[in-house]
Length: 272
Image (cartoon, rainbow, N blue to C red):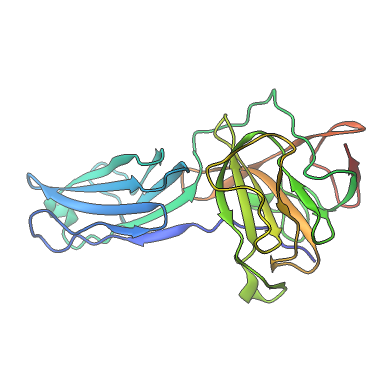
């Protein structure tokens, strides 16, 4: 069976560092650095995107509703951008342990409906799991598509964009839960802010670099069987983050020799 790739959210617990002036030093995890500073009797909670290539969506969980009635705050940060997530009276900030969650992409982005997507391979391939697939394409991954694909098959960019995620060091795959989240993956950010994701790729098979611009049809990597997977295949999805730090997948209108096919089902053969 085939399991969908799930984008792992990252958590950073940022403490106040007591009541001392200036607050605690920044705490960082991946693309996100978070800091709380006490200025003029208020605790200012600041997030910064330290990544040079990728836009991220940051969600701040204050643990309980504050005086303004809000518990969750979110912001979209461009590469290198810094933003104040909250400013709380010192009385509300005492003992606070704010929790930050971040996910790649722009929560405000929506797919350009005039755009179609080429298939991620040459020739013809069978759909192993389509939209709404019973095994794993539910909820956040409802519009993902898996293609049967022998290991070592060139994986092509669905659409032009910039490579923002490149994780290719995994060497193992299987159905053990120990493999969950270990699949090799590449993500490409597009001009409308959405991202396409390619997962279960062969180890160290990338043909691109992070930050590189690619055109539709460029070879990104070779297909594989890494991560939580029962057989060689390619998982693709078009996604954006949500305001609560999860993600949403969108139907992909594939260009095929039979016309535009959106949300193919298991067993369908697609070719360009």
